[in-house]
Image 1 (tube, rainbow, N blue to C red):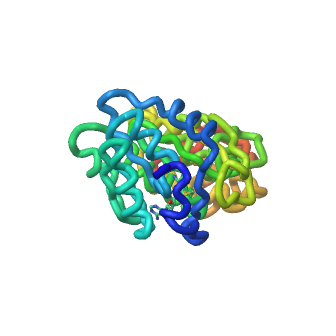
Image 2: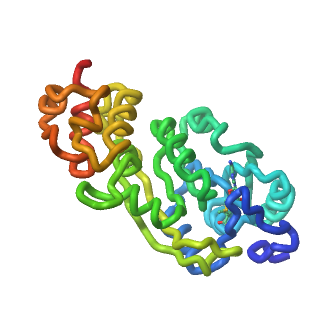
Length: 266
Ligand code: SAM
């Protein structure tokens, strides 16, 4: 059996689970090279699907944990993996997996995944909640989402996702992947991004809930001035005390500005 072209073995792709299986070897190799597993690494793949990235990672690293929700994939994946290495399969919704617990043997996680695009933001925020247990993440996402994650102030796509991600991680876009690299092809371009969680001391957010509240309100009405968008969340005095202009708009404010504002006493 050739585990890299196992469509008959694994059955048809399920749209509702965001299944677009990567098949172009060149891109698979680039992802494995980007991850660059080192001896002792605790690799965890989200959504292994038919094993496009799983088997090359196993060949290279020998052991891997995968989290897959689709019950129909569990058996063929487990069977096909035998020829490649030791695969631990967690059959569960990734949003219910406690990454901190998964890293409780003292080895922090290196997460990898060609993510189901309908769940990409919830998965990113779920991972951020466990950032202290994660060394890095290499994710394939819609290119438009990666552009938003990496955007800088002043860019049209700079928004809540950019600020929340960049406050907690270094965001490094790596490569763009066209629809034809997948079966079935998605309608949009995709991109691989590397996320490197920052140490808590560098993040500086005192109260994550307050930070989230301020960022959400600021971008809730992105055409409004900070004074208006944040009315009910921060006073004009607080905005000024954070070194920001109340007549500025959220899209002009650096990540550090939001951190300062959210850290001010209420
Ligand atoms: N890694 C494979 C590849 O690159 O060909 C498959 C990627 S496919 C875009 C996304 C995968 O995530 C599918 O295998 C899908 O079944 C799985 N998935 C979807 N929702 C999930 C969830 N909530 N938890 C875990 N896996 C999920």
